[in-house]
Image (cartoon, rainbow, N blue to C red; front, side, top):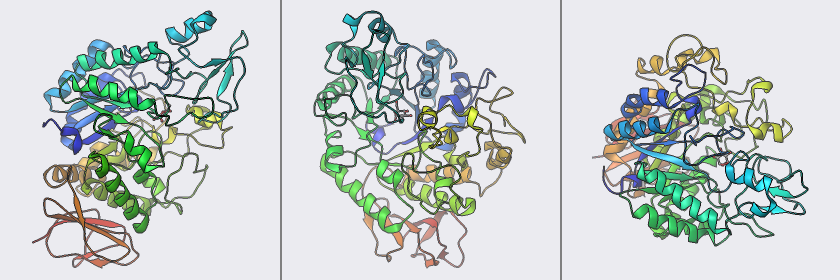
Length: 503
Ligand code: GLC
């Protein structure tokens, strides 16, 4: 792969706990992932991003990291992680890991030292009095320790925030980056990347964070072809672009696209804004439809309100499954055709819906408990994947996965879908193969096609037409390469996308 592989890569997100279970304990692991690498290769992924794999009490699915240089024993060992990296590389798949620099775990050595000795507290945010900030997961962002002081946690109380004014914290993460780059990791996804620095009045997007990333960039650049990817939920595009300046992060997730409703004008606005914003700094855009924090597209696109907002959907919000499925297919081909990188969250390629009917006592996401149960949380998009067979656990491994899979998933297993040419899985497989030839990094040219249709041609000469209107529309001339739904008489039905090689 080229030095700038990341500019147009299709990156598949593996939520390890729910991907594949190699040892039968009900939790996905490295052995399971290793056994499924050929599946990801055949799917057409260029790279894999793994959610945190470090030792963790799992108060927030591993985003409470107790040791940044180890592997959670439930997932495997460091030696196995190194084997995974080598095996992935043999298949020409890059490995991206998650680094969590905003906060740690209360189980980490540093936090335990801080608890035991008030003189060792400067690496975190301890104060005599709590502030009035609320945690992003709900409830207060300050928790009191037995001697009376309070510490800050923007997320769960088990995730104490680091103090980035302390030089130890800088040294620690520089060393952690080198630790993993030395082991062959090709890139890092930086969790909550805009939150690191705080003042007494603000906790997001403070200027000193850019010095951190400039320094991290010099570390990444001292290795070959390593990439830094930011998780940045910033509404202000100019502020967002600052993180992607040539000496900072390489790319960032496009959450505006992910959150956008299934509406042609809104989508076009977001696509144009994305392209302009990234052009100012020369960074490639990315296109994201889902991840482990958001409602599955099949469910979201079937609702009356098709946008995504954290905490926006309440229990029991109705969704039309057929409509959602059709739109999710159309959205997938739209996202694949746009210029830049692409993220595919595990299960998206199977068209899995959000599992909304989980028993409340099984929900593990702290968002659920901390919202007093009003927000269903993110467990519904984290249910273990169905691989094969007619009944749960559908080849996931072990007799009972950590979250139960719906019986109805028998139609959605990878095995069943491979055998069905019209399945979502085969749409993704064909789409990703063609994408590698026709799309990825570059530019687009919009075609005039009315208000309800998004149509553009890419540098390869291939045209993408997505019909978001209520009526079928005629296709332009050219050979159809792929369509997300059935075409009749060269008419593109509503909620359908087609790719054509125009003459
Ligand atoms: C990021 C992660 C999310 C996690 C949070 C706190 O947003 O994607 O899963 O809960 O950070 O680490």
